[in-house]
Length: 119
Figure 1 (cartoon, rainbow, N blue to C red):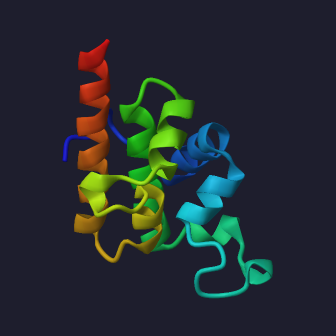
Figure 2: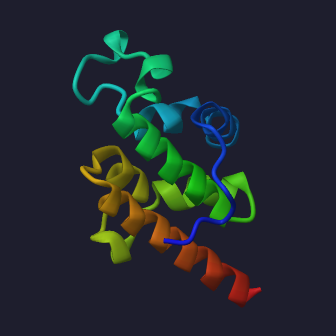
């Protein structure tokens, strides 16, 4: 997987994703409510885990492949036939390995390239 630019610190990725993608989508990507009630889940803790940082890194890469945040948000939320008819956001949330996340960022790179070629 080719990253669009050199990845910043996890804190910077978190801030950029939160600003561009919104708290609801970032919380979903990081697993809010997945293993514990949402009322017990804390975003500030979730992105500091190894899995949380990996998911955040994938979301950040997707954000930077697209020309703007609305395109990235839309791509993350839409059902994607190339990814098994699920949304990339669901795949990021449920990823079990770095390879799972690489598959998503590779698809984002391909989608953004296709978008660029269409213009």
